[in-house]
Length: 80
Image (cartoon, rainbow, N blue to C red; front, side):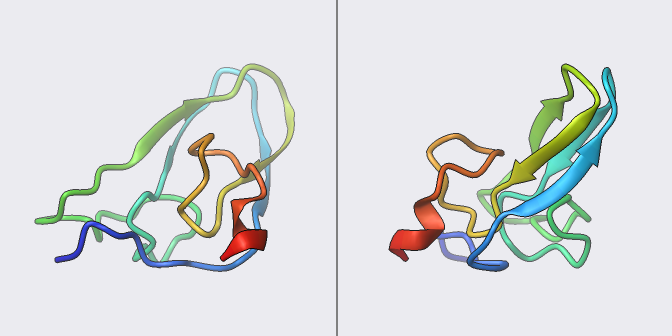
């Protein structure tokens, strides 16, 4: 397997999160439950990134898997 993640989409995933809830963001790009992990990274160098919501509201999870602010979008997709 490669050390480069698959690009799930070249746009962020807007998600309504709940304060105190933990989410596991897919880092490999192979999950069928984007932007969240479904275990598709098994036997690879990738692991999901844990995100705990600090408050209720919408956050934008990275879809291109190349953000410098993983698991959140930082606009890197616009440069791919």
